[in-house]
Image 1 (cartoon, rainbow, N blue to C red):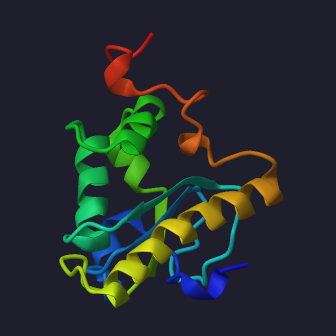
Image 2 (image 1 turned 60 degrees about the vertical axis):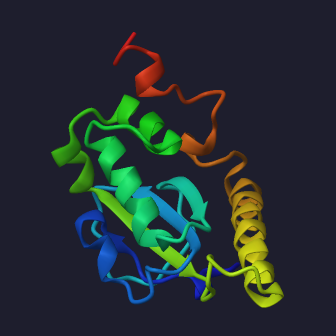
Length: 158
């Protein structure tokens, strides 16, 4: 379900190479030692996070915030949870994959057409959550806020 909306998987360091990353959208992250870069998106148990953005900086800006946080800065709550488990940035990004579903619109606009599309972005993220839970019985690991601690709230580690 929804597989045709997503780009092929890309290794994290190549995340900005997808055409259209300046637009809002939904992104899916997977952690795997198996290389599936360039392969068509499919839902897989290795998915660790689903996120979205309606920001004027698009997917590219949101993934930059994610990257900054897993590298040791702050700014992205989900990435803060990833950082708790994966302290070594270099090791993490060798095995981190991303696929994006882009929604072409102008997030600076208040035109009904653009506002409706931005609403579809939010709806699509929740449809993705629901589909993942239907497939695997739970949210992706780092979307589960109750079970996944944040690095910044634990003074680094317990």
